[in-house]
Length: 354
Image (cartoon, rainbow, N blue to C red; front, side):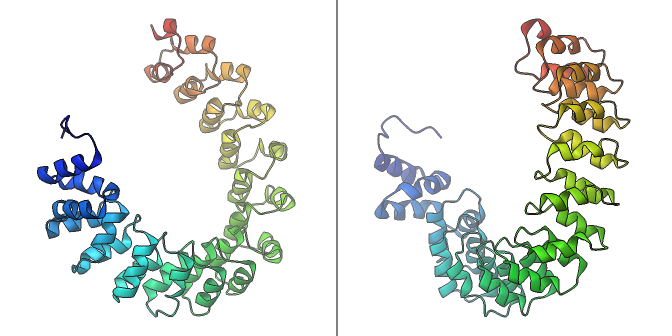
């Protein structure tokens, strides 16, 4: 729809939309309208149950419309509002006080806009769905998580172990539960206490050591030791950890695990010496990632530009550090897929494009 030229201000636009009867434009204007004008827009946008159900679940619905829909007599509409990611904290609080359905409470417990004070009101709710939502909600406080952990299922305990608000005390108590996957989540948590991380480092389960290797709070000494772990997946996780300096990865250039070498080749700002060694790797995926790495020096890119693997040569063409001279050479590559990679470049010189 094109708005006519005489709609000079918001009031005239609202009148125009109300007369036109377009529910989508009415919804879009609703947050900016005054109280009286909102009523007129609601008569258009929420005229029937079909529209109300539509906007209760549409991702673009503004919070002001969701507030109106939270008072709808249709139970399904209220459930959709409670689940909607744009529903405000105030609307969620109103739903909590006026709607006793377990579905609404479960949606509030898992909602990203529910604040800690609102979530605390649900701590005594016996519903498994409500408790699960609380365990994973990023606004559930440490004290609330500790209270939930006392009577939580294993599934809920894993949610608590992943929650950023879980503190060292809660995580230490969960570690004692002994489940391997639960311990893995705890080993990966930045708030896990040092004694738990030390125990995880020497755990016989590779999963737990791998999760520890991915922990951003793991000490450099721990990560260096994990770089020489007997399990390739553990070494790979440690090599992926940004806390590990590139200099510590030199010993892994000839690592028997392709996964480890591929991760090295992908690291941004990787040492040129390491990239040069990986550029002659037997695994074409390693060479491909070296070809795409913006830290790869020109001399290495030139060698990869004549690689037998088409994808490696295309990787050079897609590298933002690839020189104009090298792009001109790749523009004459016998493989169309490589030339397509060159043609995709926004900085391609006119002669190479020709």
